[in-house]
Length: 400
Image (spheres, one colour):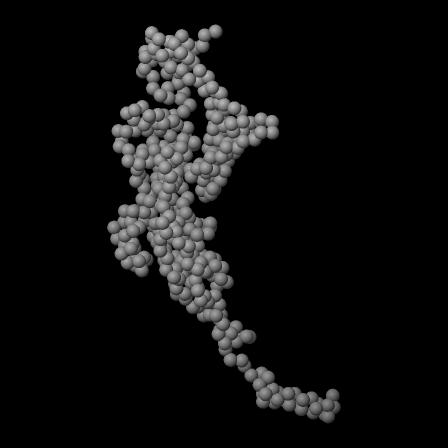
């Protein structure tokens, strides 16, 4: 390279640098602020005012009823400084405090406990511990705090101080208070800036719950005195779980009858609860001993009726909560009986907690019962058999 060429190169370089300095080609941009996740309005939880709180037995999964929720407070975090774009980013994280009711205080219980809490179907709380995502510190704030109450607390919860004296309305219920429930991540996800739908796995009993306890409590709640019913025969039948929602006593008992196969007999003095499928007969009666009285055997001694085939189910389906799948709603259908092209599926809706195997056993039994009861027999017996009680199994010997 000769001197002339070199001189021109220097002149161009120096001139370019000088012009750039004069006209700001390399002048640094001022820092600007960019806000991320800033909300102007907030979607409040849908009101469920007036919804009746269920009574629970055993192991169940229940929907939460928002009793109170604060308008979320936000916190600004200096999250990022972008040196290239000269942007100063403020990320907004929103938190809320709330109270959610799960159930009425159990009248019968043994060490009741909220085992899990589901937030939009995902478990973030289990066995007294909050999942790391919600439990971890975020900036200056510690994670979610959950307090559970079972209807017998005597002091107010400081988390719910914003309610004042209104907390007393919760004190006969099973409920949880939550402090600093984070509603979004830095990317705006998690719960999408909303209070999530809440569900809980709730156990009223630490040990085994028996059907006699459930039935007795339902009857007590309906105003029956203890001497007006007898549930002794159900005392050895385990009951996994049952949610007694708003309904008549008769419909609640009918759900239990569907799964646990018992009859209700009104003896005049008591309601007596007896098992179906009793193992042994109590008496054998000769056909000649059937009739109205020892002296008068006029009239129909024995009548038989039969239902139409098309009135019978070809299969039975039960709706229940699956114990083996986090108590999620499930259904199970029995085997099918073929009647040509005719099909009649009988569906039974329940709020029972069942295992999948138990649900299948129930629907198969219910189908067989429906067909067994297709034929019904009516007869009277002589006074000498007055020791027999409703529900007793007897044999009748027919004449040839």
